[in-house]
Length: 517
Image (cartoon, rainbow, N blue to C red; front, side, top):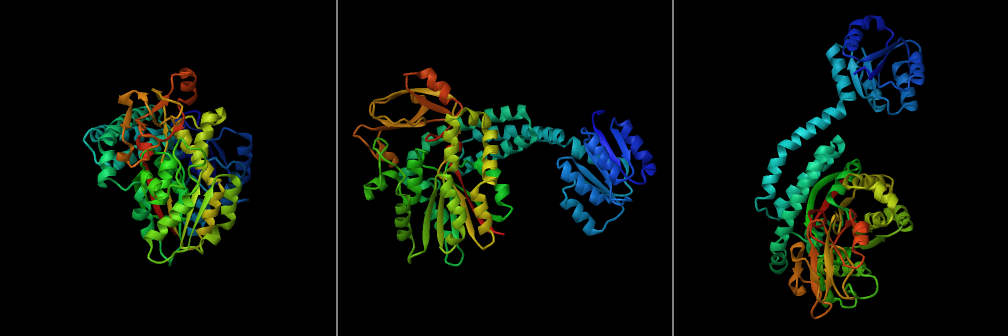
């Protein structure tokens, strides 16, 4: 403990000899001063001070003034205020200056030790407690994964795993993170079996969870009213864990009224899932009703160019009288700035949809740029990058503006992504799609154990580009590779975030309803 250095500033330092002796016996190194000026000088001369104990009432500059100057020069240095004064305004001012703790005189040695444990040993204690708690729950999660869950129970298990990921991120417990990663992999193995056994029944019989095609009817439209404007924010590729890291930021200004979920349809890719969301139909139904607005994988041109048209048609079918609505798509910085500038105008609508493509672009850029691969090397770093982006984005500035008014905010996505690790060989003709997590084509050859195969696309309510078209969806963390240049593409795509297939991360999507505080 001799490397922990404490600076203690108190004009009655001589009266604190018992406390100082106690700390020295515990192995702490204590520097003492009797006023704020000397405290600031010691901070300037000693860059290895770990914590400052600061008396509130000292001659010369006060403790609060000293605190203010310390925080200005050394914002990350923990400061503990010690005072005889229990006045509320003194406490509020000290807490507002982000003190680490607040003690009332007379302080006994155990109080001081507890404070130091909280400040200095906090990370270690949190890590040990988190590891202990997860070890206790590990077996319970394992038992549930293998107990024949339904779609709601799978959501519960996935949320539990993500909650542990977030806790272990904060505790910096590398060993536990590795164990949890293995458990999530086991969960995805069992979840893939569950989807293989149930997905086509859901589509055929309509007895499954809310999915992309009925998301708007079930989770969005019931909350659209003329009294309060509703903004639906669809963040492309937003996984549940990414929602969890931006949730504390949004919660500063918005109150969560309901955190819900839906399942993305297969393929879990933008072309299929997002068109299904805005059309309120499955892909084969869209192709049948709106043949001019649907393009199959093998056709040239943009595949998501008519989301606003689909939305307008679904709004018309759903509401008995017209509602004022708008659709805004953000695919670059210019669009983002426009949203930031125009956000208050959208509140004149009853319902506004904002599709924000940043996270999708981030996952693609990460595949192609080495620097981003390093910045977002794994799920923890990917979450951190998502949080940093959101906190500094024009989108958050726009949301801060609308938070001044009474607004319904619904945050959701179209699908998630999974970090792929295991290559699976596929052979197909020139017409076969290039997506790494699903393929549609004729005469496909593939490892059957790695996929859900749909030889008759209509059974999954998917279009049939050709008479003999087959869809295959990758399970777990698999990704499809052709035999040509196999090793090169394996190295290139391994550990990248992809979508289109079957996994907890891709299929279980957040839909969160919030209201301005």
